[in-house]
Image 1 (cartoon, rainbow, N blue to C red):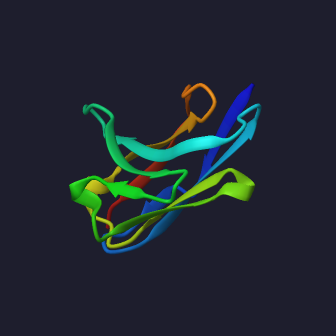
Image 2 (image 1 turned 135 degrees about the horizontal axis):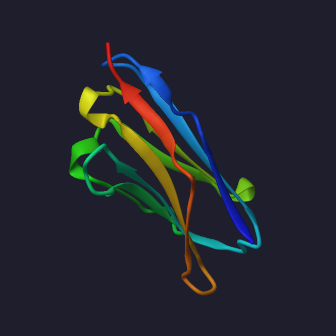
Length: 117
């Protein structure tokens, strides 16, 4: 059984920063891709960023230059450093992990990020 536990969400003022964490545990084995998605009220879930096992990172255009994804492979943990936050970044942020051995994907439960003054 695989579990993903996210943390770090909260309320922040525009221009502020937050750091999200996603820790994978259980029978996860080697991880290929660790990524983040988000879903705002009334909208579809959208891709934010990902990091593959080779160290390559990729970002959605709307977060480039503001968000940074990183990972600690020894801890099976991914991070999302979010700077210069905007009200439109308000959403539930979900961690997504793809296992290397069978490419099966897992989702976290989500963590709420609210950007408001």
